[in-house]
Amino acid sequence: MQPLSPAGMQRKAGRLGIMTDQTELGRFLRARRAGVRPADVGLPSGPGTRRTPGLRREELATLAGVSIDYYTRLERGKETRPSPAVVDSLAKALKLDEEEREYLATVVATAAGRMREPRSAPSRAVRPTAKLLLETLRPNPAYVLSRTNDVLAANPGGLALMPGMVDWPASQRNTIRYTFLHPAARDLWPDWTQKARSCVAQLRALTGHDSDAPDLAALVGELIVKSPDFGRMWERYEVRRIGDGQKIYRHPSVGTMTLSHEILNLNRANGQRLVVYLTVPGTPDHDAMLLLETLETSALDRAHEASADELAL
Image 1 (cartoon, rainbow, N blue to C red):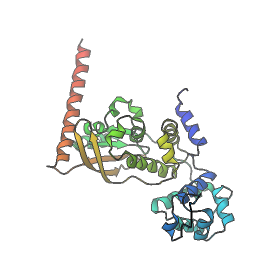
Image 2: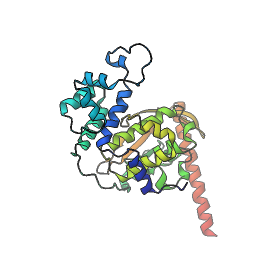
Image 3: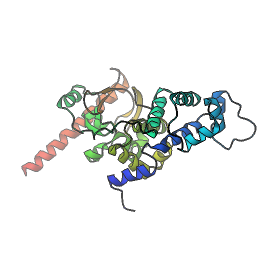
Image 4: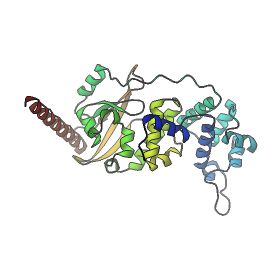
C-alpha cells in the first residue's frame, strides 16, 4: 500500500466525514446521544439489555420537545435549519457543556449554509520576539504551537520533553501526531488514553471553526489512516479546547515528573500559542526539569562541536 500524500490525506478525511457538512450535524447528535445514559436525564433504564447505547431517538426527542419524525430528519441530514430554540433544547437534553454547545451551534450554522469564509492558511513563521521569549523562559520547557499543534519553535527543554521528537523532520513535528504515531509516546504519559482523548477533542473543537482548512483536514486524515485508536476516538465527537493543568511524564532520561503548564495565545499570530511548563523550585519535579535542560543543552553543544569539526576537515 502506497503512503498517502497530504492531498490524499485530505481527501480521505473528507470521505470519512471529517469535514463539517449537512451530515455532520447528524453524526454529532448520534454520537452525543449514545453517550448519555437514561439515568443521567432522570429516565428509567427499563428491563433487560438496551440495544441502543445511551438514549433512544424517541427519548431524546421527548426531552427536547420535538417530534420523533423531526428529530430523525435532523440525524439523517434531511433537516438542516433547526431554530435557535430547538438547538438550545437539544443542547440541554444532551447535557452539553459550553464548548460542546459552541460546536453544535457551529455545525448547525454550517449545515444551514451560514458559515463564514474559511481563513487563509496560517503562516508557520514565528516572530523573533516569541523566540526570544522561549530563551528567556529557560530552564522551563516551552514551545510555540500552531493551531493544529505543529511545533514551530522550542527551547532545549521543550524539544526534549517528548523523546524522539527531534529525530523527526521539523515539518513533521506535531504534538498530536507524536501522541498517536511515535513509539515512545505510550510510555511517556502514564495515562496515555486520557492524553490521547484530549488531543482528539481539541482537534474536533477546531473543526467546528475551520472545517475546510487544508492543514486540519490533512492531519486528521493522516491520523485516521495510520492510527485505529485515533479513528475510534474521533467518532466519539468529544469536544474540548486545551487548557492549563498538570501532566505526569515518565521520561526515559530523568524519570517521572509532574509538570504544570500554562498556554498563552500570541497576538496577531494566526492561532499560534506559547506553552510553558512549570514546577515549584526545590521539589524533585523541579530537579528533574533542570536535569532535562542540562542534558539537552549538553547534547546540543556536542552536536554543534561535531558539526564544526566536520567543517574544519
